[in-house]
Each structure stands twice: as structure tokens, then as C-alpha cells.
Image 1 (cartoon, helix red, strand yellow):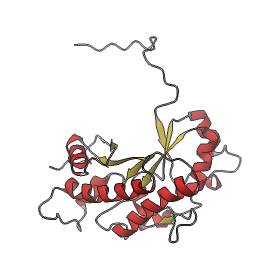
Image 2 (image 1 turned 45 degrees about the horizontal axis):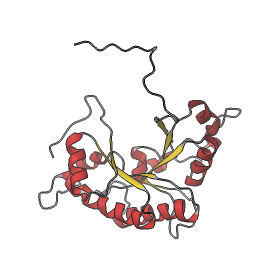
Image 3 (image 1 turned 120 degrees about the horizontal axis):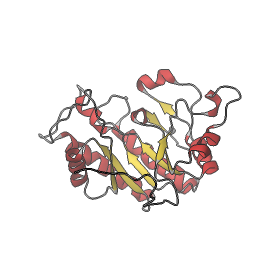
Image 4 (image 1 turned 180 degrees about the horizontal axis):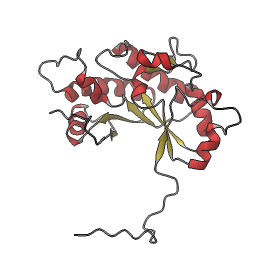
Length: 232
């Protein structure tokens, strides 16, 4: 069979762009841009994304939005990414930029079970809860879409990961994801929470074992020789 695409025929229109872009909290602050260049908000108004994800991709797992007592946006950076610090784009600056563009926020809260970042599971949970409180209760930002961890399968290859009771990796992850998601929804029951997987099998394992608490799954289905699949 043959698929023919007629680029002159419109079959669907969107009130708002369904596609989004990703902000890099390490680099995207306007203070890091060359003198005389347009601002980040100006660039976004040209692109017109529907969503903007923050604080980034895999680097999100090495970041806390603040520190105790979680009273202000004060980014904390860990691991190798700590060597890359310049003028950081903090959470309030991210929301301010979105306010100038009309894009919707999509926030990743960090999560890692295997200790690559040096951040404890308890601190990850506290950061997630306090960020929801800071964003939606204290400041009224109304952030609806949240993702717990990014590219969670990277933890599977860590030398310090040890399966518990023979559980498959994503079944093990789902338990902690469910715990964090439930705590976040206690602060704001209206939010939508997802987590990441790399194929339909790991996504199914994650969704099934997270107790129905997840509203969506994000799948980064990268194609290339560097990606190695694993059995669930």
C-alpha cells in the first residue's frame, strides 16, 4: 500500500500549538545570552510553543528547585551538572517567561532511586511536594502537568541498582513514583502527573504498578545504536 500526503488539504486545526519545547535551566537565563540578543520570551513568541518543559530533560534528576525551608526559588544543582553552573534559570523566572508568551508549563520533578545524584529519596519526595505547594498554593501559578523523573530507564544500568525481591526494574520504580505522586496530589488534587518510560512494555509495567495514580506516561523512544532495551 502507498500513503499519500496532500499538504494543501487541512484536516485539523488547533486553537493552540500542541507541540512544546524544553528549557535548560543551566543555560537559558537571559543573563547568559550574548549582549544585544533577543530575550528568551521574545524567542518563544516567535516559536509559539503550546507547552514549555522545565527544568530540562535528564538534568532534571540532578536539580532541586530550592532547599529547606523551601521559601523561595533557589536552584540546587548536583552531580556533573554542578560543574556547568552559570546564571541559572530559576522556577520563578521560568514562570515569568511563560506569562509573557502564553505557553503552558510542564514541570519535571527530579527522581532517582540509585544514588547517582547524591540526593536521597526522602529529599526528592520533599522537593516534589514543596514545589507543588510553592507553585500552586503559595504563588497561584496553576501548574497542571507534572512529570516524576526523566528517562527513568537510565537508572537500570547503574552499578548500584539492586532488584528487590526479583522485581523488574520498572515495577520497582513504580512503587516510588506512586508514593511521590500521591504526596503531590495531597497538596493539589487537580494536577495531572506522569512519569517516563522508553517503550510500550516499560510504560505498561509503570502504569500497571503505579496503582492508577498516573494520568499519563511520557515515552522517549530514541532510535539509534546506543539504546539497549531490557526485559520487563
